[in-house]
View 1 (cartoon, rainbow, N blue to C red):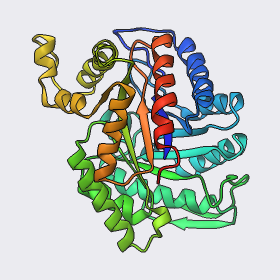
View 2 (tube, rainbow, N blue to C red; view 1 turned 90 degrees about the horizontal axis):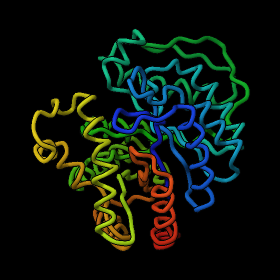
View 3 (cartoon, rainbow, N blue to C red; view 1 turned 45 degrees about the horizontal axis):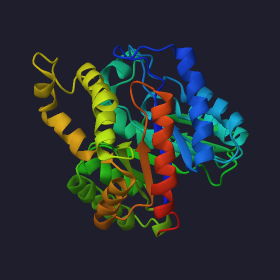
Length: 345
């Protein structure tokens, strides 16, 4: 099994304001440490027009990480392709794959925040169709051959992209899955990797992964192209009590601020207990992997009994950005969880 570490957005939230310059320096330091600890890849995340400086441009940061590391994969999770020009995106990502000596992994998504589509003057209701057409444009560009494309949204004549990516035919492509059957079906039809979000229940993951695999096989894609990844918030410590304290101090405050600001839940008017009783927060707490290394291992195994997946992303990145606490969690995961699964099929 491969283990990805992320997602990093280099945010300065209200509850723990930070220097963005410091956050950008630290993310490179964390990536270097993740490589030392044996993680397979390190992932960033993109958003736009957000009060806390949520990273709007992943590629310069990944380029900085690429120059300070030599082995670890560098991932975009997710690059909001629905907001990008696909040809320019293909050029930029090909250059990054060359710069990193073929270590780029592409996590893509259509995007969903209305403010981002409005701010960039892009029609939100067409984002799904635009997204999959944009993927096809990028694949054509990455062949290194002269190509033309005339679709519903994009038109190009007799163009050739150089340099092409080092990875052939292109870097691995994963799509961040939402909760819908339609998205699972579309990812499967396109023959792309299915990457499940952090708050889906195990039952929803099992259902949508099954729909994805069935659609991919029906479309004639080889088994090697049918890939599932699981993403979970992880609070790991020597004792369950310490892991629960990390969740209470670092993970839940992040969601309290972010989910209110994103509009998933109304502004809190009561106690924190009332806030956490909201169905959204119950999903988060139930889906998070919190406990000792053995407990985290058992949670991963429980999911693998229901759904076969060979890629797991622990998000060991919390709102306080306490380096000692973060690095200790990375060490515990790397020293105990990764060896347990390494080499397992």
